[in-house]
Structure formats: structure tokens, C-alpha cells
Length: 57
Image 1 (cartoon, rainbow, N blue to C red):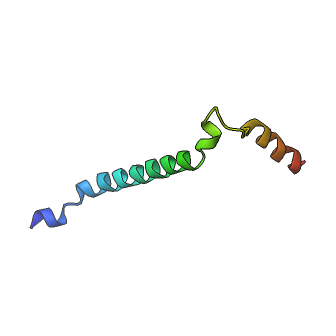
Image 2 (image 1 turned 90 degrees about the vertical axis):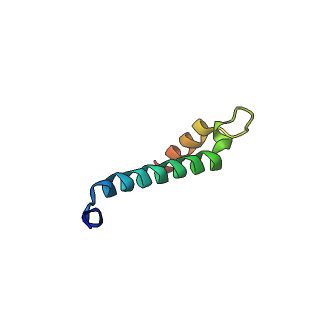
Image 3 (image 1 turned 45 degrees about the vertical axis):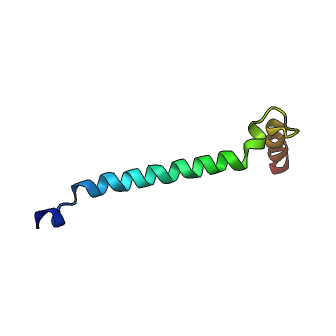
């Protein structure tokens, strides 16, 4: 019954789940914003950033 009380691997499993979740979120973000990363796009990220900065001032 000592294996029931052994929690040594629990921390490693939690870290694996945490990093897996971060990777899934990063991949989802890349898929959503892939238009900004493609060269055939009419979107201009630099122009968008400058527009946001100009509206803040």
C-alpha cells in the first residue's frame, strides 16, 4: 500500500499537463493569426501596431 501514498510522480505529471496546455494554446493562436504570418496577406501588422499606438496618444 506504499504506492498509494507515494506522490513523487504527481508533480511531474502536473508539469507535463501544464506545458502541454501551453503548447496547445500557442498552436491555436498561430492557427487563428496565421494571416499575419503569411506573405500573401493584405494585412500589415506594423501598420496595425502604429494605428493602435496613434489612437492611444
